[in-house]
Amino acid sequence: MRDQIKTGIDLTGLSPQLQLLIAMEHRQLQIEQKQQEHEQQLETIKETFLQRDAFVRKLVDQKVGYLLGKPFGIQTAKPAYYDLLSQFFDKAMMRRQTVAQRTSICRA
Image 1 (cartoon, one colour):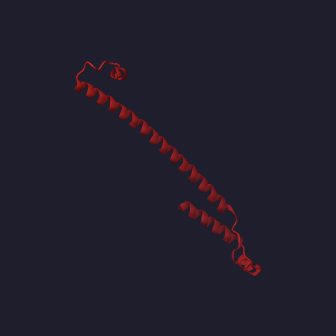
Image 2 (cartoon, rainbow, N blue to C red):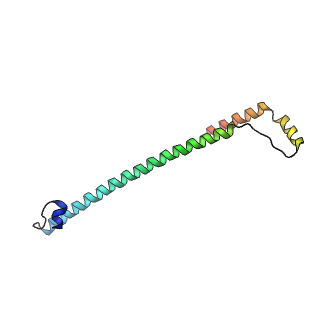
Image 3 (cartoon, rainbow, N blue to C red):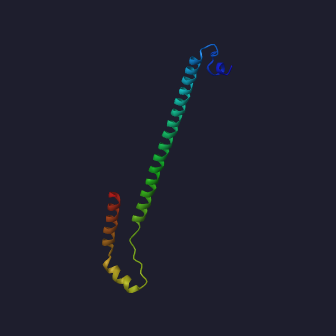
């Protein structure tokens, strides 16, 4: 009765070898279906990771752009050091440094 429900055909009248062969084919079809389902799930997972990777890369690029867009600042505990460093690091030099940083980040 159980064999008849699975395949829709009464297998009890068939030889044991044919019953075994039919059962093996049925099991092989089940295995192939499960393998296809697993491959589809794996492909979905891969696509999800690639999308997240692109999203994270975009966020990192935005953060780098924000940090490099900020002006170059000098902070010291002693005002004399600040005066000396301010003379050395004029605005033109700070702009060149920012451009060099952006260029090196883009190349990396």
